[in-house]
Length: 166
Image (cartoon, rainbow, N blue to C red; front, side, top):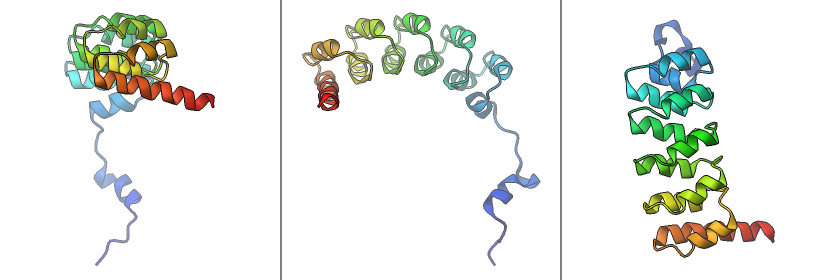
């Protein structure tokens, strides 16, 4: 016999209510107070999700940008609300994945993209070329990069711009 109770009602029933995990709350809350509390959690993965939350206040992003765990700093760098001052600091991070995420941030200022276009790691340069804010002059420079992936994405960016202009 098939259960006729709609799935939504079943999920919302008292029998299935489960306290959400700290990670879920960290990723989804809009409460600055809750984010502040969770940003101090000893579990790095909770702080990771705080850093990814688009409602995370700048003060918390600033604190998390100095976190000892580079995964947390990676998510700060990707957060679209991360201000340029923090992105600038993270663009000097010793871990290339943090710098790579700075280059991927859609709000990364051109000055930082210029700096990262000279990064020793090809993945960072590739993400500079892939960034929608990358200016034509930088794309032209990267289209001559020693790495084929960087050249590919730079040429893709140049083609996208040409298509938009025609």
